[in-house]
Image (cartoon, rainbow, N blue to C red):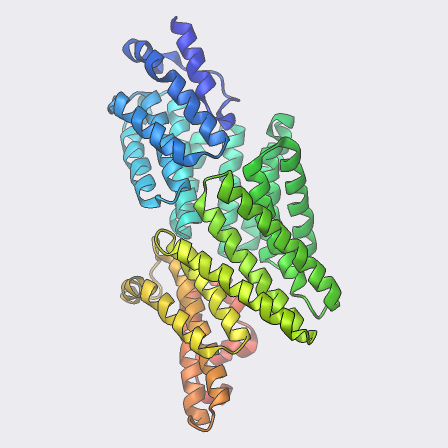
Length: 479
């Protein structure tokens, strides 16, 4: 019976855990082993819920299981906490998920010097989970980087878990604009996963997505298209529904960027790219709305679809097809407002990102009252964080808030564009000197927030020779 219970516990593990079958049986106190019969089926069911993307059900069942275990400090208890925290984070209750993971991690690390390999490995997985929460849900990239680095020593002897951390850390560097570091880490993860064989074929596809995102971020669209198409094909072949949804979002983003390159492609080619992008976003929305309970991905897909419709509207405007342009503009606005509404309660960075895209949409079509309205909304949400950030010297590293520095930069930049556009329409009311000073002030603020967010990002987006002079002098004569 003892050995059968250990076998049950092995069976409960998620797919990424199945490679390491060497359980240290001394980790399990005999009393815990005896009690395993009460909850082994429940733990197995929770693992299956994760594989099927039923995260809301995993929240309820793992919470009930934890109440049964009642903080007994066994390895199985902490595995249940891991599932619970992960499910909370995936379903948008990020603060609660982080609190659960951090509390369990503190207790586990206090015993790490006496623990088994599986105990230490779970510590590494908790660090990785916290890094994911800080990166994807909060855009707190400095904290995410710290957690991923802390996870690595615990996962040396677990190739897939170690590859996962490398891949995640690579994505952090992508967001921070550090191309060389990002590519090295993502390539390392892909190399490890390819070496693990066909059992990890769909895990390698996650690295294909990371490669695609890196190439997309740094403007290498042909490579981004190739890797995102490969990822989608692999996930479709392996039957990974969540993987298909993630690949659709990435592939759609690449196609949208291709469709926006109107200087390189004729209108019909741009329209074809955008049609394909919208089809991919529509597929992703269906997956994350009906099959996989991951709200942040649903919001992301909805936001990206709105951006694709915006590009389509602008393309039709250039082609002098005003009726179609108007229809696509309405669809763009509807999708982006829907994303804003869904993100406002729990996903502040994604809410701000959706607001910025909506503002950009209204700017393109010179609807300045709507631009101003949505800028006010974005500023209202970010104002409490801005007050905190402005009290910190610009050279001081910002951890928890660093992702919001990017959004502050974007909002200030959009204000400069609003002022430039609005005063271009009413230039008789405002002198050129006043207009230039107002625009310059917002642009200067955008540059400073951007530099505090990431030096690499600032250099790429704000530091061409002319813009550098503009920012340093902040003078009207540079306009």
